[in-house]
Length: 518
Image (tube, rainbow, N blue to C red; front, side, top):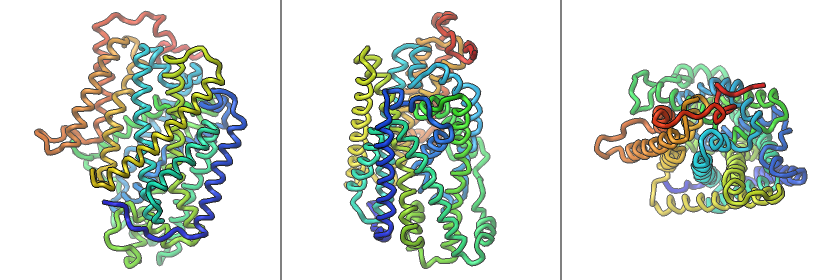
């Protein structure tokens, strides 16, 4: 569909609230920029950041604008089944605490791709960097576009103008303050988005006759809290097993080999603080997701009682924005709009800084310009952050142009997002686990696994995007990343037996079995 007609104009009191919020974000960027000392400060906060702040930042990064709007929309229309993939997060956190956090901190890494080169070869480092960077480039552009759609629906402002304003704001404070600005702005943004959800829940409790008791009883009676999904072992549809496998694959890869996580693991001053950060950022996701699922449940009960307040034909993802601007008091609605923006900003700024980190460390410093002083690389990191921001804005504009001119339907944007994520991931997670958990794996076997993972990913993606093709979709779209990583790991492992076994000194301190924890 095209951009919606505005639900209601943003009021003066709301604009003032937003102005204060934006000014605070810029002030943090300027302040952190004055404290900046070298690339260590820009990428890992000088390894001195408080664990609690890093954890809240990780939590905010996990809650994008897509989550802020999609979770309430999903719970409003159906039940809580969308939260099932997130239930696997605790397992990923446990592995991070006992394996990945101590390893990355002892190795003193800035980029996860440094490990891939040490374990395999320079090609693995370049491959991981390029695949992750391109994926983040599309991710940032799509998140910015989706939040612009939401603000456009609430305000009527031009989507292109919203993209430009939001993009410039995020780029400015990220360029100036690096990861330290990202973490501290994320702390504020996470608090804002959580309070935004709570404010809406409390408002429903006060307005619905019978309050909280009515909300829970009516939602329970209509199975709105169900996590139900089919128990059939059918991997071509969204069964419980598909959701769990998708969540396990996604969360394990994020906590083991995602650049934004690795930077945060290395940012606190001690292992204990890094573990605290993982616990806050990981385990905290589940109650946070539950809050926004509950927002959708509350809105369903609310509009059962006040059906006349919900226009006919409002899309499920627009119910929450409609409620914000029509039912919340002036100023309060501005605060919740800020929460919508915060959800996007906390994801985009992390990707901007992370992409700058891998491009500076893994490409520019490693392959292009070596042996310069740290000030040179800090300047280049800021230039690359700016360049990524410009690319993000252009990609968002391009996506809006494509939708406005009906080259694709708006409801296919998320499918396109998924396609890019699946293809560009290319089994990088499987490659990392192959190196970390196998002593037998070698560079030739890993390369074989990576190539096959890309081929399998392209084949599965084609089937998902073209279900009418002969044979249809071989698997549900959530399974593409699972199969891609599985192929990279299994094929890489067995292909390694065709080549010489790595010498002990080649894998010393590079696998879970040869790592000396001392």
